[in-house]
Length: 504
Image 1 (tube, rainbow, N blue to C red):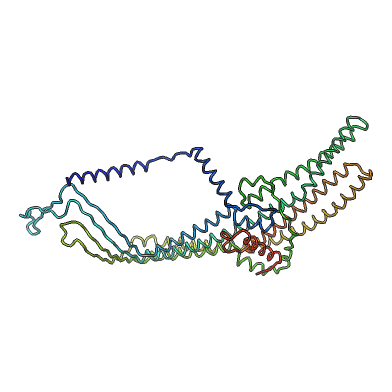
Image 2: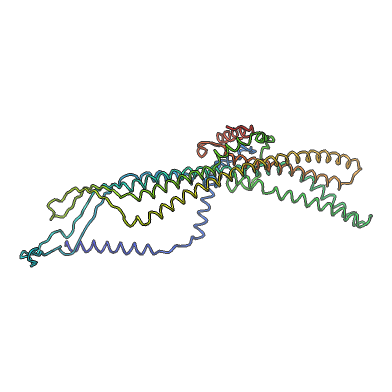
């Protein structure tokens, strides 16, 4: 019965091993349409629940706050930072000693029988062969081990992972810069579409009416055929320009809604914005350039990331140097066996071991050279990044100055076109000008207003690039868990500080 039980246990173990081997050879199965559709529906429902619904027209600070809180790409950066933090936390436990509890079962179908040989004569012993262990037994142990070399390697690895957490934070800062810049550009495009909506409809209606009248004149042949054709040609060109404006601004609301993290069902809904007062960030042009350079070198995320990478490279050099030292390890264990042939079935054991890979010395110079090369590379990248940041600062400042000048010029042109449009309208009503003049001037006015908004958007984008280079994005602690109204107020405070031109 005892042998039969052992065979049953052995058969079960072999069957489990065969089953696991078969599972390892399973091939990947393609997702079915039902599985994909189910997952897509779940994701869309999740997106709809996570975003707060709109309650009215959106302000610029609310649009930025929603993007920071709900934008999928921004949340991905936050999760990457959380994963990096979790990796660093786990790496700290690698420095702890190892405490291992183990238990094992041993079975053999025949007794372990051995003979002896006389150590002097070499002749077989006259004693009968003896059994030294049970056919089946269990062994349990609790062992403690610690290696000085492993501790040193884990220590520097943990420091490297901690620096990678800081790198993830800097990359998230950079992502916030880019996100705010995109939101600003899309926001002013929506403001332009909203401001020009009624003007575009009026101008298109007048152009279509004037075009129909001209075609009637051509059909009646009351004038020279060339005159109405030229008239229609100019009208069609104006209509083409109006349609181009409509097409350019048609996707602005969808882009802004997507950046704000609105659910897919809300992308097609009409989105209204509150056009803020014209920003006055020109004060940054009055700041001394040397102060701007100092601030950029202190807070720019790209440069700070290069500094962390240089520190990681230095830590790697220290890890390589540790391999020059011998490994010192200590172990202690408690053991218990159910083997009835053992007189002492419970025992303790301890050991101290020192080891050194002599052949490892051959590769040590190459490893040291590689580590030093990594440090030099990181230093050179830091210097190159520093030069790039200074160049980027001066270019961003120049682009911002040019954008401010272009906006002021576009504003002046729009004001003049608006006054001309009023005069032309009065003269058309007095029958001193034909409707073509009014349509042409309406088109010119719309285009000048559009260029004004485009210049304003370019000025906002240039200001955002300057702000990103200086590393002065909205610093909001706990933005992931902060309620949307509080986050909106924090963003508004940060925008006011930037518009005031304050170097904090």
